[in-house]
Length: 88
Image 1 (tube, rainbow, N blue to C red):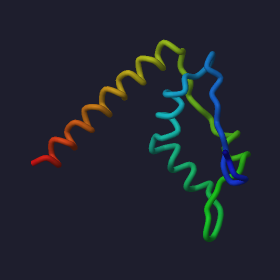
Image 2: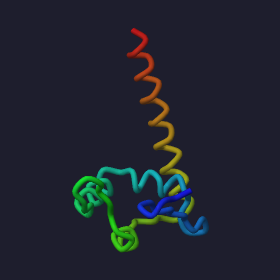
Image 3: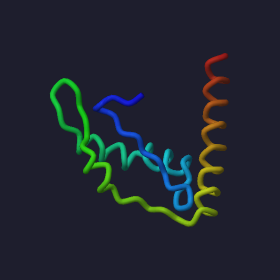
Image 4: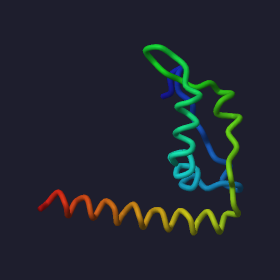
């Protein structure tokens, strides 16, 4: 269920894989773009136009898969290191 203040972004899986899009939109550069584009006083938001006008670098699917595999491995390693540090 999405309210009026939410957007659902669905990738065209023939062009961009969902996990690649996730990592891309979660990257520092895009988070910075969203912060700059945000408007509001008590609740911040960005417009549909701000989302639609984002320029994405979308490599071929094979390269997207390699990139996401690499990033997933690094995420798992970081999680493992954090858990090890917390258990000390």
